[in-house]
Image 1 (cartoon, rainbow, N blue to C red):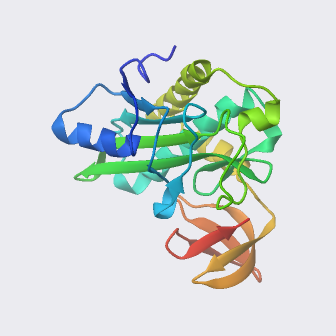
Image 2 (image 1 turned 60 degrees about the vertical axis):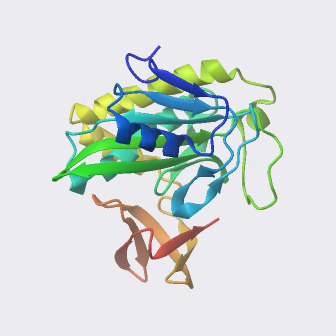
Image 3 (image 1 turned 90 degrees about the horizontal axis):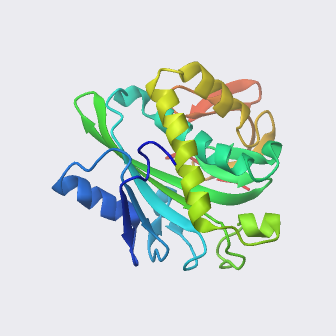
Length: 249
């Protein structure tokens, strides 16, 4: 078991969004760091860009973790995103071939060209520091049928060919998240930066993007300290944030 991540577990019969529940909990009190809000029936899960996260009942992992990364300044908040994405990737690499697990900027997790997990981090700021973070994770485990509106989903069962035990997956994932969180807290930014860079989906490849609604082919060369995606176009490297770019798969 993890030392503190998931040891205080709030289990909900159903929930619209575990992130919403955790955010409301933070408004009422300060729960122990590592508190996890989990449900196996999430009806309105949220992803990046206000997208909906689909999850079949009792088939996947949908939960939110509360951390207090007060050691992080606002300018370094993307380091938390990197660490959490690496934690999810670490867990997946214990089940599938490691080289197939990639992080699609900013923090979706892919196996080959298919999405297996999504992460939504919502930070609260006090002064120049991150006072709290609610980290929502949706991981496709045993679901095999998805809505046609989801273009490229995959689950662990679809890869492994058999059902996986959800509780065992949850406990192992909590350990992986905690290891990376403590690595971040310990100031191991160089390790996190290097491993996140090397795990980037499409690194050093030309990929299709919509940049300010214009179709563009550009080479992914990395991510800067502020979490912007660096793309090379006609020999020039430009940094883009989520508001101006859409990654097309």
